Length: 238
Ligand code: NAI
Image (cartoon, rainbow, N blue to C red):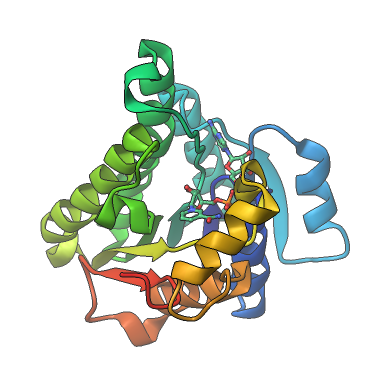
């Protein structure tokens, strides 16, 4: 049995990743921050997962929680760093707090969870880390400079960490979604989304299950010689 942790697992993409990894035969720790109820709902009726509170911005508490998970299961094999926040603002309106919150959650959270997961993975010479970036981290988005910068940081962290951990049998890769139909898109009006879709070569938003399929691949044995890569799931945008 392989054990996985998904952060921010109660959101649209996180839920799809949990379900997919369960289908793949993994036991999944469903990391929640805001909604225990949603996490319990995801796990209801499934024998392959359990809910765990995990705020990725609280580095020391997250490390303690991950040590607890390791004690519980014996080996954390797969870490999916999916937790994230978004915000649309003109660059000059971004406050110090907006900047800190964005970087601490979207990039700091990836750093903290990787750092907590790695000692066990290195000891066992096995691990699969999949970070969820964003096409805006590749292309840059107007009115999302802090989001784009943090996600570009996730891509840089992935590439560098992949080099450092390759000899330890650990792969580190990024899935980089385009516009995916989740709560994160609810900040946009229907008209904005329609205009967006016109720019996407495939003419539609992606689904969380399409992102989960890419995560499943990186987490699988088939991807054993693939590390430091960025796989776009973006309908042809990048
Ligand atoms: P969502 O808003 O449905 O889910 C985000 C999840 O992150 C929520 O469960 C939330 O509770 C959790 N979260 C927020 N702050 C947290 C914290 N401090 N600690 C732990 N969890 C926290 O959004 P979605 O779309 O499912 O996003 C998942 C990931 O995919 C994010 O990293 C996002 O940036 C990325 N992404 C999403 C895209 C989209 O179009 N929906 C496009 C590109 C990337």
